[in-house]
Length: 205
Image (cartoon, rainbow, N blue to C red; front, top):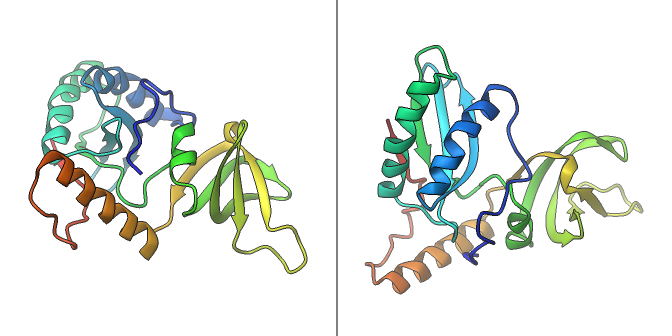
């Protein structure tokens, strides 16, 4: 799960509107620190929250990493001032049920259940849910959970048509995430991880 993705691999699923403006400001800073931007999302949670999801190239991140990112992007956001009202800045990991935003994500998480939304309908629908089958050229394969009896249960979705893709929380996904976290801690010589310690790493500014 923690295979290192190609260096500086561009995101193929990106933001729109004000979220995109914030991403334009923070992404070069985050990359300059050696991390990767996953997603920017502005919501009305806790007043107004600007959430920045980020990770190391191997898919991991720590509270200290989140703090470093927050300290470096906060001044740039203050100067550029894309969000004109008061807001709360939150830097976090992508979480277990993470968004998939790069080509390598669709290969790395093959075998797990995902939800995908498209910019325009394919075969009469924009929203899909099923088991991710990995990459097939410039598309990703999906084994559908809700295919009608007798109908094909597999579909290819063009990557450039995807506006949102996210892993679905399952026991298998949690178990794999925990195994990988333990493996990485052994590599780094850290103490054993608590099986219940799977919450997102977050730093608030």
